[in-house]
Structures are given as C-alpha cells and as structure tokens.
Length: 332
Image 1 (cartoon, helix red, strand yellow):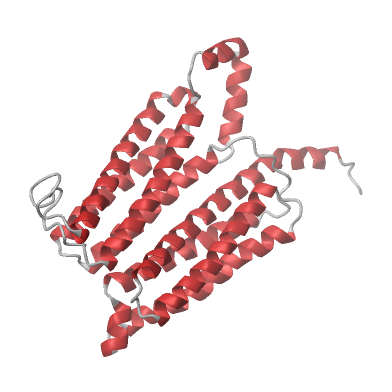
Image 2 (tube, helix red, strand yellow):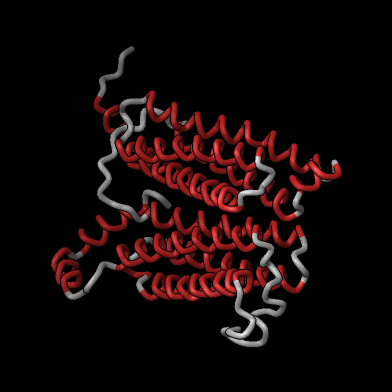
C-alpha cells in the first residue's frame, strides 16, 4: 500500500505524458492531494470528537439526551439546554459531521479511482464501514444506558477509524526525501508500539466505563481492571521509547521519521505525567482526565504515522539496495 503511490504516478505519467499534463492543468486540485487533505481533516475532527466524548463521560452527560438520534425529540433542544445537554448534543453534531464527511471521502475516492492508487478506494471503504459501525455503537450507548462493553467498543472503534484515516493520509504523502532506513525492523517496532498503545487505550476505556478507579479506592471493587491498566503502561511505554531510541540511533533514516519519533517521545512523557496526576488526584480534575484520553489518542496516531512512513521508506529503499548488490562484484 505505502509504495504503490509513487509507482502508480510514474506509470501514469510514462503512459501518456502530454495528456497527463493537460489533464492536470484542467483540474483545480489533484485527486491524490484532495483525498489526502480530506483524510487528514477528518482525522483531526475525529480526534476532537473523541476529546468531546471524553468530556461528556467525565461530566456525566452521556445520557443527557435520553433519546437517539434526536435529543429530547428535536434537532436542537433549546428548552432543555444546559452544560450536560450541550456536551452530548455537540458530541453528536460533530460526530455526524465526521460521518457525512467520510461518505464524501468514500465517494470521491471511487469517483477518481482511475487517478488514484488501486488500494485507496478499498481503504476508504474500510473507513466508512468503521464510522457506520461507530454510529451504531453510539446509538446503542444511549439506548443501552451506557453499558460498559458498548462504551468500550465505541471508543475502540473510534480509535481504529482515526488510525485508518491517518494511515491513508500518510501513505498518500509525497515529496519526502527518504534516506536508507538502515533497519528493516524499524517499521515493525513502530507497528508494535502502535498496537500496544491501542490495547492500553482499550484498558483505559474499561477503567473509565466502569469507573474502576473510583470503585477501587472507595470499596476495593474493580481493582483488577485498574491494575491491568497500570501494568499495561509498562509495555506500551517501553515500545514507544524503543521507537524514539531506534530512530535516533540510526543516522541514515530520514529527518521526517526522526521528527515523528521525537513527537511520539514527547507525547509519551506528557501522557505519563498526566496519567500520574490523574491517578493521584482520583479523577477529581476533569480537564486532566480529558487531556489523558486526548494525549493517548494523539500518541496512537503519531505511532501509526511513524509505522506507515517507515514501511514506505523501506519499500522505496529496496530497488536501490538491489541495484547496489548487483553492481558489487562477486567475491569467491
């Protein structure tokens, strides 16, 4: 997936360079650029939706609108409006906007499919399927009165959707001056870190949806869920640190990869600090709890971008490495 964009572009231009150039000038924006910007924009909006959803949960506003998809039977419940109702209503509004934008992204990728990599329409189809499933889970969250497994699945699906959009946008990014990545293990280290952070986020969702921290401190219930989340910090943190250390040890990798790894390292430090403060303050400071979830999502997205860029760098390096190996005389 990550190496097909450049090969696709070169094949199309070599096929008919005159028609290709005139075709480009007649367009306001290239389809690849359009899809990339749309995917990135929807990903940012999704991150905002997840932050608002965290605020909704922290403020006990998950059932502020008792019905779904409307709120008190109307699109805008002006008479019942207060902070809790506004949070739930605004969360649904932005989430609906993300859903409609994903439909546009899906439609555009199929409409321009002849000018795009072959994998892209199928990738956007997967993203659309995730956001549809996410909407269904959102409705069930209300109708099933915040059942913890549905709430956890709701966040887990949202994180997968968010990651898929970032993967699409990153895979379509062009004009990166890649150097040899120096290690074929680097992409897998990034992918492993992303998976571990995702699993740790799911454990965090279980803690939040069952109010495990409050119950553990108050009645010693749900401590096993809380402890699982605390133990999960170790592998996720070590894997993220491995990404940063590996990126800085190998000087031959591109500056883009090193920059993304550095951002991941800063997010890890911030996440640990916020998580420790949240734990010590027993979730009594709502902005800290919201920031904890938002920073975790940002860390996951950064690691996904790193993994895609690293896979892409390795793919682009393979022809160069093969040429160098063929040019070297055989030593017997």
